[in-house]
Every structure is written in C-alpha cells, then in structure tokens.
Image (cartoon, rainbow, N blue to C red; front, side, top):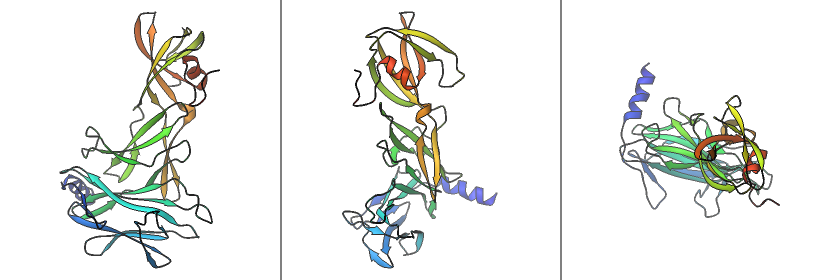
Length: 293
C-alpha cells in the first residue's frame, strides 16, 4: 500500500518542460542526464554521425550516478543509441533511449529499432518495462512520441506505430500505463482514421457488417460499376509480441476491417464494416502499385 501511495504521489508531481543543451545533456524534471557508451570497455561516442556500434550504454545523472544501464553479448552490437525527452510543462516527462541491435555477424543488418521509456520524476527516472519496438517489414516506423492532449493519462503523451497494410497506412496508438509502468495498446474498440475514396470496377455483391466483429449482424448489398465508396476508418487487433527483453508491436492483417460509407436504398448514407481482400477489391481498393486490370 505504501509503495502504491508513493508511486501515485510521484505521478502527480509536476515538472517543467525538458530542455536539451548543446553538449547532449538532457534536462528533464529537475535532473540532467547524459548517455555514456562503450565497446569492450573502451569509451565510444554515442552521437557519432553514422551511429556508433557499442556493446554497453548507460544513463548517468548530474551527480555521475548510473541510473540505467544495458549490455549486449554474443557478438551482437547496439547501433544508433540516442537519448531524447519530451513532455509538457506541469505534466509528466518522458525520457527515452532508442537503439538498434545487430543481427548478423558483420552487423550490416539490424532488427527493428526499439526504445527504452522512462517516467521522469523529481526523484529520478522510473523505467517502463519492457522496451518497445514496432514490427519490421511492411514499412513500419519506430515508436514516435505523439502530442495527444485528450489522451489518458493527462500527460497528453502517447505513442504511435505506423503500419503499411499494402492498401494504405495507419497509425496505431499506445499509451503509458503509469501504474503498471508498461506501454499498453489503446482500447480494443478504438479505430484508426483512414481517408480514402474508391470506385467499384464492376457489379458485385458486397457482404457488409454493422460492427467489426465476426458475429455482427451482416447483410449483402449490390455494388454497381463506378459506385464511389468512402473509407472512414480501419480496425485490427494490435498485438504485443515478447522478444528477449523487449516487446514488438504488430497487428493481425487477417483481421483487418474497414469502416465504409454507403448509400442505403439509394438515398441515405450509412456506415458499415467490411473485411477481406475480396470485399476490398469489390469496392475498388487494390494494393498500392497494383491497379485493377
């Protein structure tokens, strides 16, 4: 109970916005943090232009005390180890260290980048566990801190992983859970905005649903050639897959749903959901670079 009370009190403490000095020191919530890197015990420059390859990095505070450290073994190396910080004045501050890990003997190929996140408090850094990365492949982006004043907690800070479905791109938001000190997916009911307008190539029958659920009420409608359909949003399960000491954010492409706007009875516009590549093609949506023949 005491630990919970102290943690909640730390969450409520307000901090000024972070600032970064020219020497690479990050000032966050009353403290000054520096990133120190080394390889086989020899100091290395973390801020090297092309990204230093190191096997150890640590974060030190203004007193020179190590507040976080990480090492890698078995011939692998960290690359592009970079510290940063963000936040709003009077709200939580987030301190981060991003890194990539070598996956080949010559270190030319790397796994998807991942990030160590910390809640920056007047008492120091509190690590979120585990580190987080966006899935590789399909042109994904590393987690980026997004300004989102309406998000919970009231820090207005959320994360985003951008995915390429082959048809369009969407950003899945995640949130900081300051109680469990984890990064968690948004509500399973949250959809991802998509703004597209497509045109049906032929006459077809389209299966539509009232919700993005397998057992949702379904019906069939006829789609005529040239009929335009507005795509409003997408939905898919967001997955957190553990991998060693970090988690990878991905989505299930087999469960991708689209919210569309169609005319009902030839007059009123109504919103429905569709799923599956066949339905996507019926309304005129095709993979990028692969137009209909």
